Image (cartoon, rainbow, N blue to C red; front, side, top):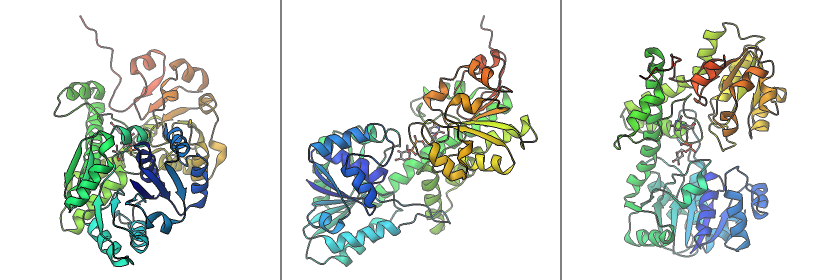
Length: 439
Ligand code: UDX
């Protein structure tokens, strides 16, 4: 099928490459000419394992092309996918300006019957508005169906998630549209959940918010473990065997970040409130996460009342490993506080060095290796569990730091090994206690 994709961000680009991989003829559109030129040359604008290789394979096969000429791309497409961003407004609601603009352009450009597939995460009811905009802008007598088709890919595993997803959610209001969607996804071999458009829109938010809630819940229990002397990893191991609970998304830490959970929890909370309904679980999820983000700072203040003049090693900066994305990464606001209070920051990340320097307005804090970041440090804070960071031996901390205090926000190390090596080690929900003496 001939498919046009609007937007080459995470959702748009990975979906476009996925469609091409499954044999469709894809034209991806973006207003950013630099990105389009790079993509045409086989260069991905985002760091995502496996994406560039798949992109180059599909370019070579002639199944994908990139353009800024949206009108031509939409004119003869059988399906047009909207994959542009829906960032957060000041009040937490979703900003739909880009989605609506693209919808208008699509209506004005369509010259044959087709589907408009909405992949951007949009509040419940937005597909109805998109339908009105597209129909209102039509210049030819064509038949158009709007379909909600939310995306569940996670950064760092986006290609895998697209090609091996757990389900494809298809929200349609007509049998023709549903049949066409089944055609598009026939080769994917994933279960298709066919529902109404509004349900599809809500499935996306409810899924993300449930995962965020799971994380906030486990972080609260971890904080309780710190008080009571239990260990969160032992607790979640025991919980996870129950198939009703499941063993994923139970990793305690310094909270969720990224481009989805923070935005989507606030957007659903705002949407419900706008309808006079308070989503109490989501409200709690958001509040817990806001506080959890600063847990290391809280622990740091207990270790050393004055931060000014202290050398602080910061390891791992992105919101999670295997991505260069710093959106809502806990490292950034924490480092801003440290900066403001006069700490000497020595930061390292395997990939997001330049972006961090730009965000903090100071390139001198970035060090080009773990050892350089640890050198002479009074304390080390860990924000992201990159493999390279998890592989640091206790001896390395001892060797390079002036004072081996390690505050680990992602539970990267064996607490007993760290303790045995003479490191003052604190993690999340894993208080140090004597190794159990099993009889
Ligand atoms: C998420 C969803 O997983 C994906 O389905 C959706 O389409 C977009 O949002 P993403 O934001 O890329 O994907 O990353 P994810 O792996 O879900 O992690 C989000 C945040 O939660 C990260 O900051 C991560 O560190 C944190 N997290 C995740 C935890 O703190 N504990 C966990 O157990 C899991």
